[in-house]
Amino acid sequence: MTEAAIEEGTVRRGRSGRAARRDGSAKPHGAPYIVRNIPTYDILSEENLQKIERTADRILAEIGIEFRDDPAAVDHWKRAGAKVDGVRVKFEPGMLHEIVASAPWEFTQHARNPANSVQIGGDKVVFSPAYGSPFVMDLDKGRRYGTIEDFRNFIKLAQASPWLHHSGGTICEPVDVPVNKRHLDMVYSHIKYSDRAFMGSVTAEDRAEDSIEMTRILFGTDFVDRNCVILGNVNVNSPLVWDGTMTKSLRAYARANQAAVIVPFILGGAMGPVTNAGAIAQSYAETLAGCALTQLERKGAPVIFGNFLSSMSLRSGSPTFGTPEPAIGSMVIGQLARRLKLPLRCAGNFSNSKLPDGQAMQEGLMSMLSAIHCGANFILHSAGFLDGLLAMSYEKFVMDTDLCGALHSYLAGVTVDDNTLAFDAFEEVGPGSHFLGSAHTMRNYQTAFWDSTLSDNEPFEKWSEEGGSTDIATRANRQWKRTLESYEEPPLDIAIDEALGDFMNRRKASMADGWY
Image 1 (tube, rainbow, N blue to C red):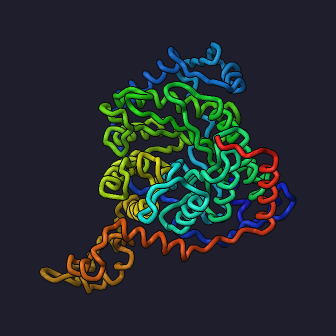
Image 2 (cartoon, one colour):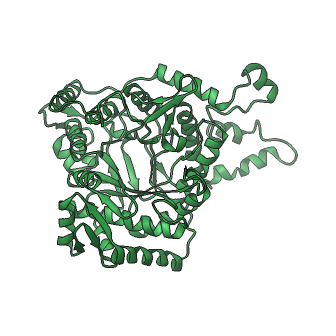
Image 3 (spheres, rainbow, N blue to C red):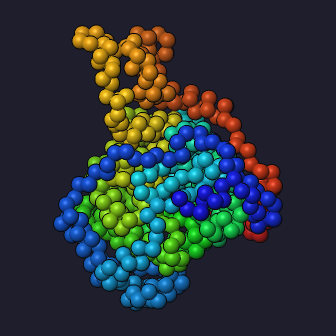
């Protein structure tokens, strides 16, 4: 445990000078995170892992990575002893490993409700909604551009789910708000409509800094300087390019002691090789460089080793998601991250399907299980992902959170003790009878099995006569509407709410609307 425990339930002051109290008696909506009780699945031998690491070292030392439009980042590398030629930076084998050794393997991201703070790293697993879609869709209105209302709706759905642990970030793009101002509304919406941990903006350095400044108003400046309260998800411009927009945001989070999530997005055959081993080596090199840069900005800052391997149709050039090659590649990424002792963000509930249908769940489960078995600690894209991340689906969101519930039980593994071995039940029942009314069954029936809120397990006749022959997407449509109708906003201190409003108003007034 970090300094976190010292601060819970105490009074602190934000930059506004107003007192803010974190309620130490507040309770989580479900488990604040999962402690895995099943082992990770390690598929590569030591010899083959070393081959990938050596190839990554050769990429870094012989080809290098470009750091564009960020002279401060290049200066960091010069001081660290890298070989710099303009914006091209090359690294001696082992150099980046030494630098990232200062990053923590596990850290706490604090929520405004301390009961919902999450542990990221080690044997912990955190589910977070999908991120970044410009479109939203549902069975009633179809596919359309996202709005700030949709954005808030998804935050409310995440807040209401006992199976998610994190509020996420850009759950959908609210295109009805100016591009240069929407980060303020998004961060505020996470603070206002959820009391879980959340992510901030990375689309410009000042937007990253605004996001962090809003957490200082919420938590207090001193607390934020000593504790992680916000994440920033930054992407490499693969292959082998870090652009200034991302590195400046990455450094903004790091110098504020907040966690950057370092993520290459590699489509095999486009931004990386078509072969898994080569794409993994590339991804490893790109991610390692980004993680190391956070430590040069502020030694000891939390950072998450991220990965987003995907494939593409080599006939059409279209990206494909939820396919087996990236899924199995995630297993190797997990092994590599554990060797570095860094928290891992990997895979998620990916799908190319345009509807919340069988294809969506087949592809999503393929990818989601790879995240579970590779040892991912922070699983972004756990709910809502459709159409290759172009659309957030209301129905898919609810279907995916239901799957997350099942994964809670899956990750719990098998408990072996006197109660679960059930010898007393065998004594009571004996040969040829049944266990339905046994004392052991009555003692355990309420907690023995995970119970879906969406699946229909009734006989065909009852499903046909009473259920109206509905499919799971139709049931999900009804459920998200009921959830929004019954949603209760978590209380937010009035003084903090006012201070956030003042900050947002000043920032918005300082710039004209920008729509690109």
